[in-house]
Length: 340
Ligand code: H2U
Ligand code: ZN
Image (cartoon, rainbow, N blue to C red; front, side, top):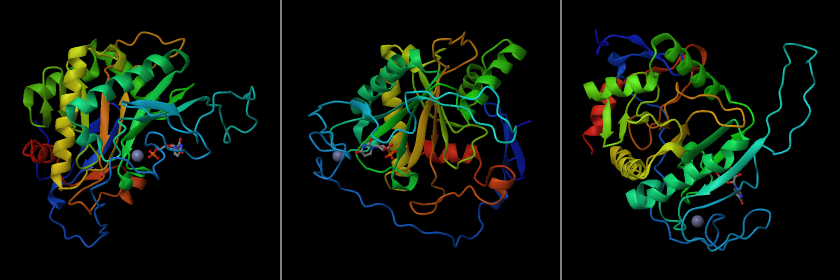
């Protein structure tokens, strides 16, 4: 039986092995919460004060090259450092555990054009970004267990600069969410003999209820278990486990699929849509083992709920119980699809 459309219920997120409360009947409640003005549009193609524009000076003094395409540089304020420190063999107090985490942090610049958001780059502008992302896995993968490619888009998500860019943090150990997804996908393969997310692609392609964008190689859905109102999951139709696996046709289709998704997002509330997004692929590193349980995917987590100014807050019950949503994933997908 499919999930109720009017009645409160919980949905299971098989990737995180967590539950989400869905309360569709609550959609019409009045709103007198926060109203933040939408960010103003129209920026110059070059900003002399921008630390990412070609030829400009960054904090601490380095001068950016006159790059013409995509460009990656070591983060001047890295969250991870290359050199590892010694961990005590045993921590005296089991309640006060810690472990070291060495790594590399880079800033990924998508374009020299300061005025562009990723959505405005379009398929042609996003195509080299796909290569830039894959190149990070290629370069950082061998020495790091996890290479997290991600981007914060818009000041609502804490992006420090509107110049189109993302980041990569590559680390020695799997971060918590990566470890969870690794475990749940492995358990699924062991229990069923098939790949969790490939099974999910088949389920969603079959129903179409939660599909937002679909092309030859990719499927974008509002996942059945989405906790953010307009959250999406980008899934390949081929058994690619890492960004480096995607062939040329797949990269072309990814660029056009993402361009379509981002255009839809921008149309939803008629504002440059804020989100955090990032790629999850099979773990890497010197002792990377088989990855038959993994399917490469990207998560998009946009915070907006009702308008350019009304966002979803993960507070109260969400902090103390579990995530909750009013709008069903099916309704969210239908709204996004109608803007294609
Ligand atoms: P966000 O917009 O997501 O904050 O990313 C910008 C990154 O750029 C951030 O991690 C780095 C910050 O440390 N940065 C530099 O490496 N050099 C600078 O001159 C400023 C910002
Ligand atoms: Zn700039």
